Length: 522
Image (cartoon, rainbow, N blue to C red; front, top):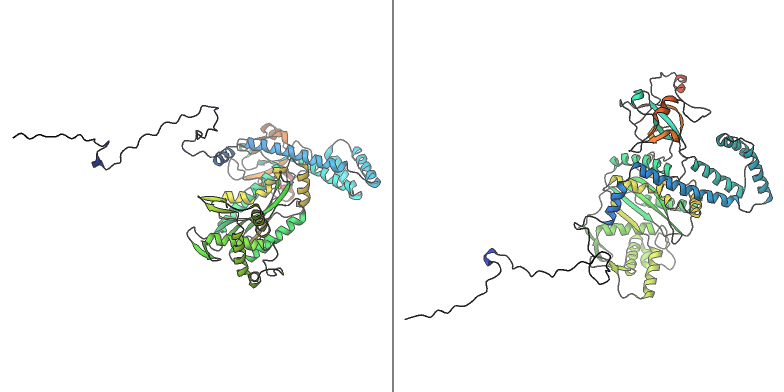
């Protein structure tokens, strides 16, 4: 009996099932990239040259900044110096041409006559004129014009002369070092760099005393004008804030920084505190209950610091609340803090959505205005973060020294800042750091202020040989300055004539032998 077999056709899978792998998905259609210069308004995603996602705008900017050489920094400082000289000269001429009464006009005519009769040498002439000014002091617009004229002369003559030092221990085997004579002006880019370098070294040396270093920034709203009282009041508030938290903020250093908004023409004063905490900051996993809501412990700590800083400026949240304050505000600081947190939550303009902070939808313009006014009146932005980069933290605290270069080309901003910051202390130590020397004045008579200079033998016994003109100074690739070899060999007394030069003769007067060093670097 014959059996008829019926064959059934089956479609085999694309890959064997025994391998335990999924089937291959259909390939997506290839999208043609637009040509160079083509419009991108069609909605197609623009091609990216950053295939490994390693190049970002901030990292490229930082990388380019780190690639600067000493010559590039010198050119930038020269450009800033030129801008600053132009601004100071404009302010000087403004006060020089200001309306004056008859007595002021007579005084200025006598002053110009005194300048004309003192010869052509500007240094000798200015020394003699200073003697005349002691008995003929200017007043009114003449005093302003003379002050800005002196500032312009100091800035113009900054680093025009350099003090030369040679190694007494190894002689000609080491180059003669040149140390500049600066003007110590707050806005001078040359002196600012040296002051920042000196203070940065001092701050880094103090890091060994820190157990839990943090960087705390305190801010206040922008102001249309600036005056000396603003710095005095801000420093007073900072000292009060530090005194309130001395239990956990053991010590450190703080500095006042000032920025200028060119668009709105407003000033912003804020404070950077590099401090040592008694305990580490809360971790990202720790949570706590704050005003009935479970939040991160770090967020609660930051809000408490913001509240303590805000109530130093805003009346009604402190020990003496306003008459119309709520019952919770009058009950005590703990209830006032919780009331402040709840009102802040009700006045939020943004919320966390889709992995980022986004504006709250559905708010009317009147509600947005009301919430903005509450935040502006009752909140002060602060920033708190642990210190992981010591060099970066030191640079952040010392930005006040070089930040003023941002408005050096604006005469009105330069005049307002110089008048307000005159005599103001912008850096201060506290707590366990109190008493540390952070003097930022640059003294060319001490080579420790100029940096570490090393001779060939390593003893670093430098002796002063005279004052040289800036044309006799050259820079190496590392930015170190030296006296030209031919000038140093043929002109040991310096190329700038001075009435008194403290050189090797000072050692013999004190009974020292010539082989003993006049000063020693670190």
